Image 1 (cartoon, rainbow, N blue to C red):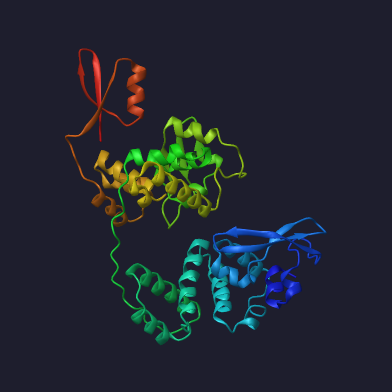
Image 2: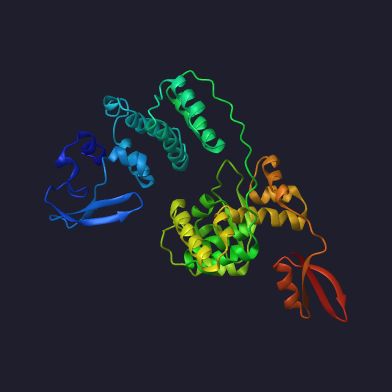
Length: 380
């Protein structure tokens, strides 16, 4: 009997079985504080396995993001036409079935999690998901931001398609704001404040402009030590694969990491990276007294890469290829973030061939030669 079946069965005994050996010889083992509150810990006297039971398994899908992959794994073992449909009656169970149907259609877990979360907010307000008029009444009367309303409409539109409910989606005029343009110094502050693996992750993001999920799926075979390149072979959002030149420092940092995740360089779960990044962000905001840090996200490294590349090349097609965009309309967003200041440059000099090659690899442009000394410059 799977954990999902035991929880649907209910009862004190079912909720206190050891998930590893199914033994009922359980001792209470104190409580643990989590982001969702205090939970009871248990200890199995038969196999010495420690575990916790917050709520029923199906409730955890809607309150704890970490449970989504687990419930989809257990639901896959069931026959979706019999086991799940026999318990359909409450809204939460409908969301379980909805999530499983999306999973079978190859929708990514992050997308499923976002849609389920939006629909669950409607359920908490007493909305009947099978009645479009009830949903429209909620959207018209409930105070919420335009972005949140847009997410609710998008999630419910997906729900109606899955259950073949006739509904004409509400038009929401949503204009995304321009993101905060972080400076190079601010991004480097995150790298210096992070541990070895997270610092390497952010360094790869800074050099490649790859999305967080793309970096999480990087494998050791995607790193070419000799050519100093990293290949994005598993792009997100239907983007194009691409190969990007990185610095020697980035290659050295990746090679110094332990092979902890088998073929993958980093933890394949993007949420782990985001949680670690948010911890560093809070610490930097407190220690450096810079409130701008709270506006920086992992995706800000991609924004910086794109705008900096466009500032250097002024060729939109080059930026499009580097970001993997199939449509140049997506790339044009970054042109609004760039302010050209031709008069502001960094300068550097080189006397030997080795110094010239080093500056060229780091993106410096030759400017002039004065008394045998070569002068290079780079836009600020």
